Image 1: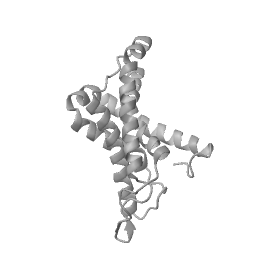
Image 2: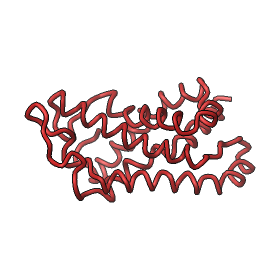
Image 3: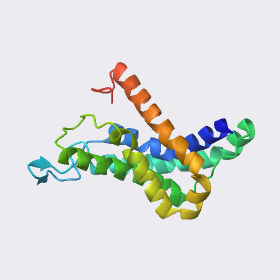
Image 4: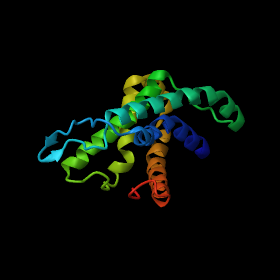
Length: 180
């Protein structure tokens, strides 16, 4: 039962886990805030770009489509009943993850934190909240059937562990400037 919850939670969140990484790889270009300031600080900063947001959203949405093609094989091989993503759900998870991260950047700037500065809790769950909210709006029936309370609980525990672990790994490999 516990393994099934973890597998379902991980599978259902994959389209939300990938976008911010894809955005970093494809980033650069024009910042979303256009250099605008509020209270003497940038609204978002140079790290939030239109190109990165579009690439991240596309990557997560395409991943949902690929996962749908893999569901029959993976489900029969593992014995787990994995969710299939309606296009609206895959898009909602992906764009929501990006918007959650953008919202966190706005909050970081308002609190005086610079780009790359740690903000424990917010850094690990910003994209999760955005992804879940937008997936609910985009595909409420699918969301309710997929993200039961036990699955949501696993997502909220599993995600910070995965987030910290992958960031530390990327830092040790020299792919990130800071381990958070």
